[in-house]
Length: 356
Image (cartoon, rainbow, N blue to C red; front, side, top):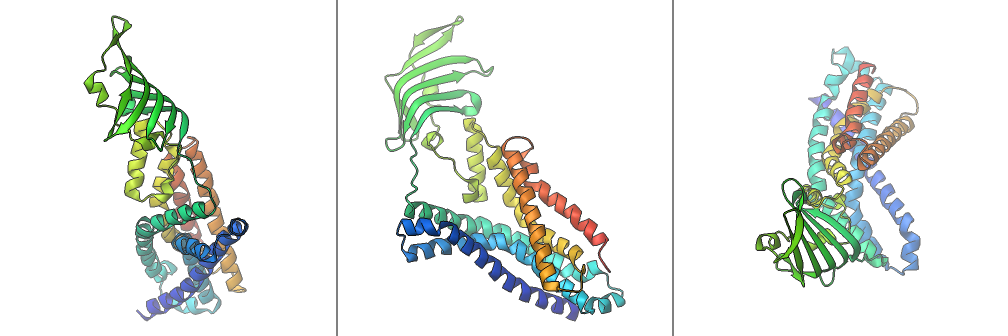
């Protein structure tokens, strides 16, 4: 029990200091990247400070894995350098058994990091992005031209020349209704469509129904009109970032993309990343245990260098797999989870060859 308290005491001391250090670095990096834009737009220091304040939870989310990796690697390497672990091994305690409390702690931290991101980081980061765009005058127009949307599981296709977001109106609308065999059975032309109380109301519509292998003009069937419920957000010139949504809303957004027939690979990979990324806390502890004890000299510098290299390798690999998932080269699930699985395997290898 005393060994566990000693290990955790050393770990938390280094972890909290390194967490503060890495959060500070990330905040300063974001500030320096935007400092000239703030100056050119005469943004008040109070608003700059508010933007950074909103950004802090996101930096904590990013910094926790790095800080955990560094703290674990440094504490264990320092204990190796001071021959403290030799005394532990002399009692018959293995390296895995001695560091098991850190592994258990990392599991709880992984779960906590997931809920921290889902309940706090998502909201504050969205506010940060919104405020930053506002002060830098990067407002986005949601009007859109040349619209094509697939809805109702492929049974309804919207085509319009223009969407006016302020009026919530589509112009020059063409609607194609398809049957179960994906054959077009009804075609509707309309000068415009106005969003009103949960559905689109057509103006001056002309309806053509398939009959005896030819289309005949007819009245617009009520059951077809009741299908026009695709929300205006579908037609906006806007790509919602899943990173700015919690898990529940992200899932609904992906369902919306699939229903509308829009590409969803990137959104799915980011959604799966929400579950995969927190597990990195457990992985880096496992990895740090294997990396520890590689040198008795310059423990601080070596631990810091190994931690940064490992984290950079993970983020680069994750960036590559996420891009591959975005372009459909690999499944979205693999894009999010492959780096995690790879580093778990790497951790097992390093632990196998660790000095015990």
